[in-house]
Image 1 (cartoon, rainbow, N blue to C red):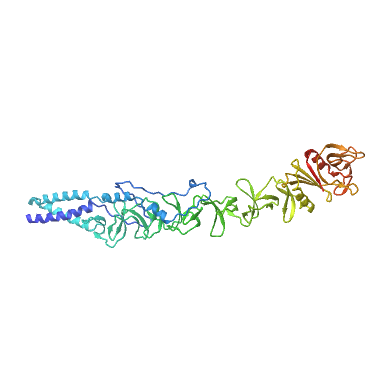
Image 2 (cartoon, rainbow, N blue to C red; image 1 turned 90 degrees about the horizontal axis):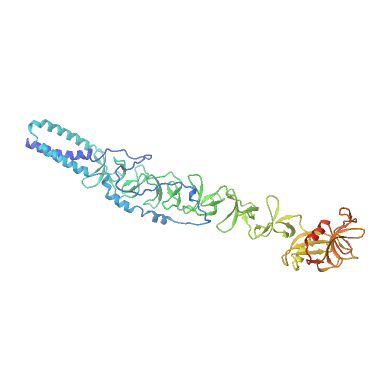
Length: 540
C-alpha cells in the first residue's frame, strides 16, 4: 500500500501542476483577430502610457502669414518619432508578466504538494476517496492536453498552444484572456517587438513591448522605411487624405502610406484641397499653385479657397487676377485688390509698369499709372499714337487733334505766377486751360474760340491776367471780360445789348474779332470766376 501511495504522489505532483496552468494560471483562449476586430484595453495595467489620438483638420489651424515655404523631409519625421516612448518601453518589459502572472503558480504548487503529502498517509478505509482523486487528476490532465492559448513554460518563454501543442510555425497576433493581443513569432511571444508587425490577415498592427496598442493613432515608420497611417493600432490601407503627425504637421497619405514624392494640390478626405511640398502640407502658404490639370488656384493657409475673387501674388512676385479661386489667364481689364485699389490686368497678369489708358469690361476707359488706376488725373494722355482727354481718371470724348497735342507739349516750357496757365492758338482758334507747374502742366479745358481777323489780329506773346469786369459794349454786349494785355480781353460772344440770351454774333473757330478772344458765355464766365490775377497767358 505504501508503494501505491507513492506512485499516486508522483502523479499528483505532476498532474496537479499542469491542472493549475489550465485552470488557475491562464484564461480560456479567445479567437484570433480579423480585419474588423476591435481590440479591448488590457485589464491589469501597471504603468502609464502616452497615447496618441487622431485629430481632424480644422479651421483652428489657420495662420495669417503670407508665403512660408516648408520642405521638411523623411529624416525630420524620423527624429520626431524614433525616440518616442523609450522609457515607457523599458518599463513595459519589466512588468510584462502582470498579464501573465506567476505568483498564482507558486501558491498553487505549494497547495498541490501539501495535498500529495496528505495522500501518502491515507488509511485503507479512505482508499475509495483516493481512487476518486486519481480520476479527477486524469480528467485535469486531459484538460491540459487540450489547452489553447498563451502559456509560460519552464524556460521562461510564453508560447502559443493549440490543443495542448506549441504552434512553432505560427507568426501573428494572439489574444490573451485579458483581452490584450500579443505578437507571436515562431510560436513564442515577442516582448521585445516594437513597431509595426504583420498579422495572419496581412494587415500591419502597431505593438509596444509585444502588445498591440489598440488605442494608438499616429504616423509610424516601418522597418521597410515607409511611413504608415495607424488608427487604433491598425494600418489604414484604404485611407487616402491628410494625416496629422505628433509634431502638429499634416502629411499626405495614399492607401495608408505617406507620399513624400508628391508636391502640389491633394484632396483631403473632407473634400477640401491642400497644397503639399514633399508630402507635407504647407500651412503657412498663401498664393497661387498650379494643379496637374494646368489650372492655377488660389491658396490661403495651405488650403484652396474657392470663393476668392481678386488679385493674388504668385511666388515669383507677380500678381494675377483670380475669380472664384481660379486664375483667369485670358482676362484683360481692371481688377480690384483687397485694398480697394484697381489695377490693370492683361491676360490675367497685373501690368505694374504700364501707364496709359485701359479699357474695363464695362466699356469705360481708365487712366492707369504704373499699373494702378489714378482716379485724380485730369489732362491729356497718349494711347496708340493719339491723345485723349482724361477727367477724374476716366477718358472722355474722342481723340484730340494735332493742335491740341502741340499745345500740351508747348505748355511744359512755361512758368506761371499761379497754378494756372492759359494758351491761345490763333491758327486753330483754341484756348487751353492748364493747371500744375512747369514741366508738369495738365490740361483741364480745351475750348473753341474766335480770335482777331487778319486786319485786326490778336496780339501774340506772353502776358498776365489783369483787371476783370462784368460787361462792355455799344450796340452789343460782351459779358465777363478778363484782360490779358491792354485792350485785349477774354470775353463772351456778342449779345444784343443787355441780353444774355439773344446772341448777335455767336461765331467760334474762326478769325473774326477785333483782336479779343471770344468764348462761349459759360467759358468766359469760368475764366472770370476762377483764373486769378497774374496768371500767365501765352498767345501764339
